[in-house]
Image (cartoon, rainbow, N blue to C red):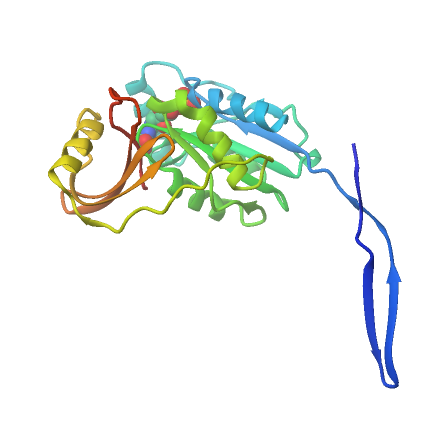
Length: 276
Ligand SMILES: Cc1cc2nc3c(=O)[nH]c(=O)nc-3n(C[C@H](O)[C@H](O)[C@H](O)COP(=O)(O)O)c2cc1C
């Protein structure tokens, strides 16, 4: 379907040497409708569940990226295999896409974070497609983080595309919160219409209090990898609870970690992501 916009009467003023000439005209301008594809890779279904939410919210076409020989085995086995492939510089072979990318202006590209960046099947995809002139919006899932690094890597890998600086990312452990957070992301970035309450800025960073340290430990203490010791903290109130931003020291390496605590009296602190 095509949209037509009756452009407001255009006032053209042209200055002539002897005075001012004024012309008015009205035109019908065609605004081409953008076509959107949700394209994703998911090994264990987490990114797929975000892709499905996106597809619903955008009413877009959707396709999953499939490999000729899918990874199999336990989590540890896949981690090992991917590690070997990375060292050897090998890319997995993908099955051809059903979608004709030429038909789309905007691609929402989704992936799990592997080794701190987008998963290897995406490396194979971007080696074969330059996404020239397309808008690429990223979404990802991860154990702890990698949202920022993956976007930076993708911007380098796809210099002919417009890769949006802001992408959507959610921890695998929090994927049940996707719908609300995704809606905020889509509205705030102008991908869908709607309204969301603007969130306040975080307070200034200052030395962490004992209570904030306990919240950090409750959110991060059980994570499979150590996330460091909190040094500084800032916070903000939201309609859903309180968000914290921590500056932590991880064996001499500073890191930024976001934590949220819901309004419910029994709400457990959850870390939402490590900035990487
Ligand atoms: C090979 C491999 C490497 C991973 N590396 C990271 C990582 O560097 N950082 C991270 O936060 N999570 C990492 N993860 C966790 C995944 O990003 C996370 O479980 C994701 O939600 C899985 O998505 P999927 O179910 O769509 O495959 C890794 C998982 C695998 C299998």
